[in-house]
Amino acid sequence: MRDSNKKDHSKIITFVLRSIPIFNLFVILFLFANCIGTGQVVEKKPDQHIKPIVIPPQYLKPIIGRVEWVEFPNWKLKLRARIDTGALSCSINAINIERVVENGETYILFDTFVNEKPVRLKSKFVKEAKVTSTSGVSEKRIMISELMKIGKYKEETMINLNDRNNLNYPILVGRNFLRGKFLVDVSLSHQLGD
Image 1 (cartoon, helix red, strand yellow):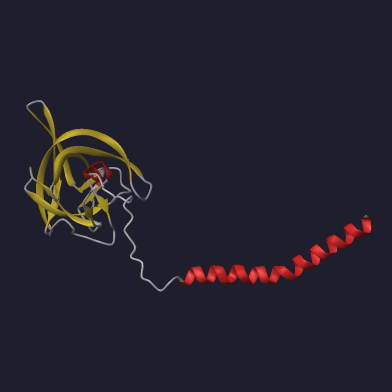
Image 2 (cartoon, helix red, strand yellow):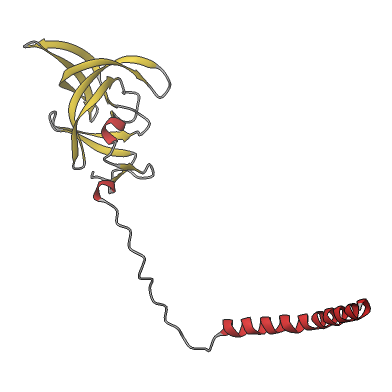
């Protein structure tokens, strides 16, 4: 019986080995025929399940550039400002700083420059705060609170006083004003008006 089993197995193996290439050819031809199709154009229907992405209004923010115009309505002043997302707070060019007390309130008088001419400004004193510059130097600066406006956005904002005469822009707008209002693209400037 063992000999007959061996012969049967050898016949099966021989048959399978001879048949495999034919079977493979059959599978390839079948797949190829189905890929070619019948030559009819089948119109693709849009997927009914895909919904458009809707961005909630609170995430639609105006894009501003690295330089924008800033208005100070109380001072009737409009100055070019550098937008700096790395700075925590806003800063304005200020020299000849004086503290004065009027009716029990402390005010700050200081000069800034508009078209290279000094302009005397007055604002309510808030506090002195330690501020670290981009160069890593920490110093105490006077903080005032003033109404600031960029485009249609205006807000009472803390601003530190600093001698910025050697810098290109008299105003630095930091995160305390920018946060939640704008997206900043540093390749642009003056996006919200001249």
